[in-house]
Image (cartoon, rainbow, N blue to C red; front, top):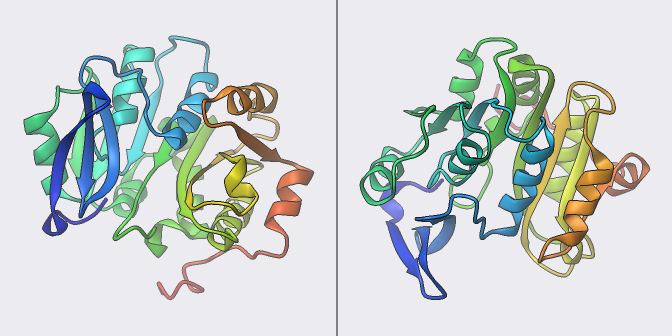
Length: 263
């Protein structure tokens, strides 16, 4: 999320009376429907939700760690579709937390919000404590290096249960160099990785968001069902996995703390 100093506001969606968009410095960050937490406006959020939906049997509660809170779109969705879930949301910007608390409906039961740095919170989290870790951490439209390294991915793997899944929102532009490096970084740690994205982005025709999913156990990601969900979305997408992801990553190398200048 952006700093509160850059200007935070919630604006009404002119095409949907109950929709609210969280803006930071004029840039859309999150979208919440006041009456329907299942309504997901942004395509990348729908792709993340598809993985959440398929991560466990329908309605089964999960333990989820959200790194980057925004307007709590996905915590609201998980709490509604999987009642009884225990969710910790970590948001670094106290201004965002205060605005969302003041202006939007309260989140479902079981959602706890903490103001902290994402990596610090991940490092402090217990081993094998979560079924899902969802990361959407940005500063000035850039993913900070300390949440983009092999060491960060290893911490995420540590806090996930054996069948747990990590989800990462990536913002990129053609030729998707940053996304290729993120995929290579996750593959250095996780046994099963896939990329979900708008077909136009994969063809180098637009800027936007892509989603990486990673699991500790080989074959954990339900690729057939994820591919079906991606193709049926209102913004049709693709799921790259196995050889297709090999081709996409190409010669990209994993990023370490040292390579990113963090040590």
